[in-house]
Length: 286
Ligand code: GUN
Image (cartoon, rainbow, N blue to C red; front, side, top):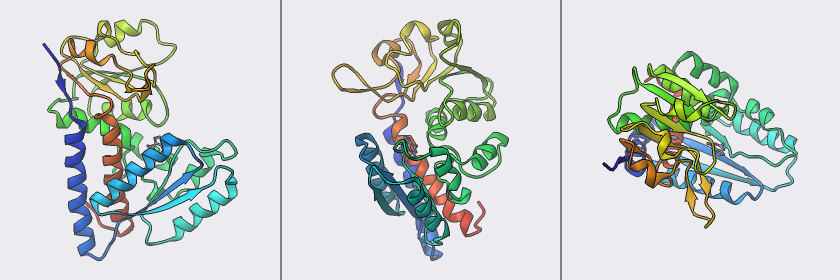
């Protein structure tokens, strides 16, 4: 039987609609949610991502302020801009698109962002809050993965969850959020032995590697929920995930496509974080 196709477009539209309602309620209180979007250099993929984020802001009713800096920007110039945005009370969220050019230290930049404006949830303070399960920002892509699973009607509690990939911003926080939802979580990586055997036990399988053909049909338990976080190009330049979509669809119970899956969710969750930021800075609890 063919797997259910998890519809990232529909779910992300729903989340953006919820954010739009919250944005409208904030505006009624005289608060205009505002995101500063900082892009350094000419990376074509980053330019596309940033554009998508700005378009989403417009749709939701969040003001986006754009800062485009040249490729040869010095670290101090970027740090100074961040300091100005930190001080600016009309700016609630600061997003510095990664990767940054090599002369700029990414860690230093992330640390410089006021934790209350860190809508990416990359600052170590916010990473710590995610670890302890406290309220605040959630990392956008990991939170998007959870929403895809739950809003498609699948329960995480008690399920065997396998995450392939252990990056700081994606694989690790996905595993942490699945754990908080009471999943039994295993993280696999490049040194994992018997990857196929471990994946085959998963009720929920998440691939966050960034490599074509990471998940093949023989690695998937019949009926499993498969979430593809990879964004890759195949030999023909076509956008593809980590999962062999057609073959895995014949085995899995549900599968998220690329494009049309997690990517859209990242942007939707960013919108939610912008609303959270505007509330936090105005001492509105929810
Ligand atoms: N580059 C790739 N994904 C992301 C993201 O979610 N946030 C930022 N700031 N940069 C990225």
